[in-house]
Length: 371
Ligand SMILES: [Zn+2]
Image (cartoon, rainbow, N blue to C red; front, side):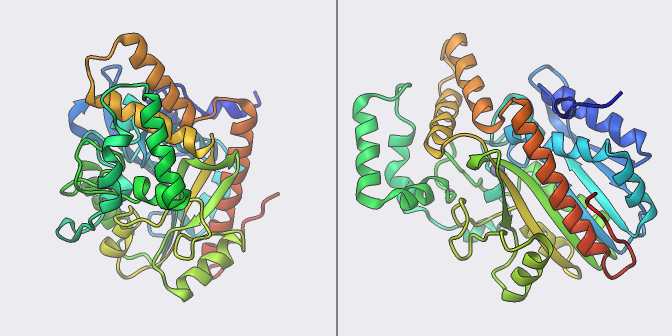
């Protein structure tokens, strides 16, 4: 029976994990699971980072596809990974070719299951991959922390006015950077980078060391949601600010690849990003990577949902009705549960995956065709 786009997506982390493992098994991929040592999911289920290796283990070139670095964004990324595993002709070509594909499902399984963007430590993983001794100070965030997370929720008219005033004074780009640029001072705050490497950080590094050893080239696509026009996937360069690396990534993914290094991206410029791990753990490889950032809702709505969910985390006394509404709001802000959106998402995921496979295979005989 022909599958519909929506069949690849899931309504819970537990469902997504089950589908991912079943699809990986059907392809004969080699599977490894890294269960969380202490915590369970929202339905009492096991939480794990699951890894499926498709293609030859001794391939010199490898494409990595990761989902749920930002927990709740895993509804999208997991669907993209499962759709690829269910694409029989693509799987066949990967198995016959010289480029392997490493799918890492749920880098942040806790956030995926509990509908948080952050992990079990309230840490944004994409701010956690740095030497914490040199974590930058975000004084702009410190100024507005109390406004972003007021005592009462929903925010009062005074609170709204104060935030509007800040944006008027500093501009919306500065506001976005202050809020989302990452901060290391407020453990209960937004976009918090933590004080040490998290479980996800340590586990992902272990996976990279093991699977990246001996590779020549690594491509990496990390699936995200929440920024940009609804349904559009922005290809955000994920690598060092180095002209040669940027040019190579642009040759892989096209001129519409943007970069936070030159301000062309919807995202603010960040430190402590996950991709740093590949430079540390696989120093010998030629690495090219992007974050695939799918738009969902307008930025201020998404931010409002994030503030609400952080407020909820800091106010466990909130009513069940308010809790459910806030969690649903966050989910909606990072996952558009419609067939149209999913169709757009999958088509673009397939395209960027094929582009990476084609580039990686270009020197070793494998050619991928998008037909
Ligand atoms: Zn994200």
